[in-house]
Image 1: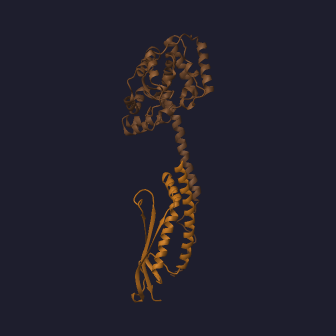
Image 2: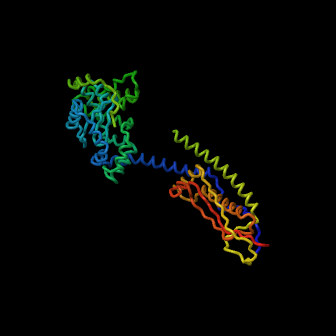
Amino acid sequence: MKYTPRQAESNVNVTPTSPIREFFVLMGGLLGIVILIYIVLGLAVNLIVPHISVDLEKKMAAPFIRSMNAQDADTTCQHYVQALIDDLQGRCTALPYHFQVHVRKAPTINALALPGGHIIVFTGLLDKVTSENELAFILAHEMGHYAHRDHLRGLGRAVVFMTISTFLFGPESGVSRMVARGLSMTEMSFSRSQETQADEFALETLNCAYGHVAGTTDFFEKIPREQDPGRFGHYFASHPENRLRISHLRDISRDRGFKLADRKPLPEAIKRSKDSTPGKPSPSAYP
Amino acid sequence: MYDLIIFLILIAVGYIAGTLAEKRHYRSIRKRENAFLNLPAVTMKGFDYPAEKVRSAKMVYGSAVISIDYFKRMLAGLRNIFGGTVKSYETLIDRARREALLRMKEMAGSATVIVNVRIETSTIGKRANKKGVGCLEAIAYGTALTVEG
């Protein structure tokens, strides 16, 4: 056998390929899968929420509620708002929750409905209200979110993760705690129709509790024109929307024959505490 | 945001520098392979040369360490998710092995033939035993025989 030296014409060990093309195909595939999961999670929210029992919801809420209870101060405000909500719940709404109010010192003019029946009321909001009816409307509005379980939908895709982790690992596990820590409650968002439904619920509740619906639109009419709109929570999202909400509430009141009467003033103790604590911004208002 | 910009710069630098280096390396490999065409390197253990005709026999070896660029590592990482042929590593291994063979031939100098050639590959660098390839070493060794013609 004679050895004939020659160089191989083609390289079998290297696939002739365009790496850029491969990169875009793989990257596109990965992005596609991520987007698909994101969409599926979004759809899963609406499928899962009606099946979350109040019991499971309480379990889910446990990891982040504990730190909130520790921050609660035993104040007149807290007792007053709690008594007000207990009264509404006992006489009119009878929702399957044990509502617990947490008053937080912050200039934010907002209230939040957290899972498990925990309602956060910021002192900025308490400073703004002038009558008990007005405050009751806000609380009833939050209860309306519970009635339609918007507070779970508002958490968005996080609620899917929370449900899965609570189911698989239990509420006290590290995974559940990690998921809870990743949540930012203040970013809860509700759609316009969810707000409208909650408004209607609140209107019914107020009519039941006081026999009239005075004070329901007071809050929306207090939009300060010059102030920074960022400080206002979902009660004052935007001007045109507020006008719509006010006129919608008035329409319903008229249609259903709800009466108007004198507003019930806030108790003297609350007024005094409001005067003594001007709404100073506190740095650690919310965990 | 800054992370993304740094990431994109790394990818672009990796792609451009990596492609240029690879092209240059392949040009050099082909040129030197042509130059060494007359020195066969075979895997056979030996030839039937009469012992007195073999003037010298010595061990020769050559090793090359080649690193992968950022872009290709990225590509291979994506491949790790979906599975399939990791094409972006093929040129890396091919270059390392051919470079090692060439260096071995260079060491052999004026020998007639290199017998019993073996090629081995190992990963080196701090990522060697973990996931992903940092850089790769190929070592080729054999016995260079100088035969009286």
